[in-house]
Length: 359
Image (cartoon, rainbow, N blue to C red; front, side, top):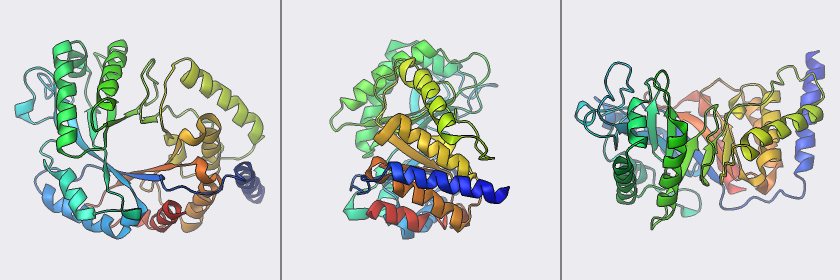
């Protein structure tokens, strides 16, 4: 039985590469975004950043951008029971505002340290910096909703975001909103806020990018994001035991209706977490889904720390990615956590990432 499944999955991979034939020439604007876990809070934050730089530096030709947890929405109630607990005590007061947090006390110059320590990448390109604006996980939405319902706070938040982005040479911001409990997020107000936020940052000079983690509840009526992490809706293929084309086409139509048509979301890049999976059949189908739905806007999500993949499993993933040629322009990986030095989970990925960027 296992042999039959392997043959079917191999057939899937061959079919995917066949679909991409004639589109195999890579291009120089390929991107690899490495997401950093947050091991750099006090008390040893500077030492830990140095450790991370030392671990990433040998692989600098294998990534173009870093996303790191750095910002939070802070204000009265942030650190109350049931709050998000993202912020320093001094920032957990007054109206909602943009401050460093999640974790608090992060090094103020982490972006500058990363840029200086890691230097330029492939073809001499500078490091892109995409810090995260986090809220929740844990925490209810009380402070977030207070921001969303205050025009004055919104205007100041946006002005601060533009100022700090230009001051720190940031490429853009990643939004990660994970509020839970009661009260819940006021989603119409959130959509209105993000429309205004994205329009203002895209209109800044120089332009500032915006990405959004859509979780399992895609946000309606939001203007074009630079990067969106939509819901994980793919069917499982762990048994590789049903007609792949039928399931693929059915899923594509459901996904397009729920996410693209009904919610009217536009994004320059869609990154689906379904491809984080340790299952090679699930990865192959998730990859096919993403390309079918989003074409060249699809970004491949990989998760070296979610499981330990052997060299063959990683090689199969990159064979599939390479099969789509210039259609695929971005890979996002979760997450680099180098508190104690290099991680063996990443070892099979680095040389292939460099090869992909160079192809």
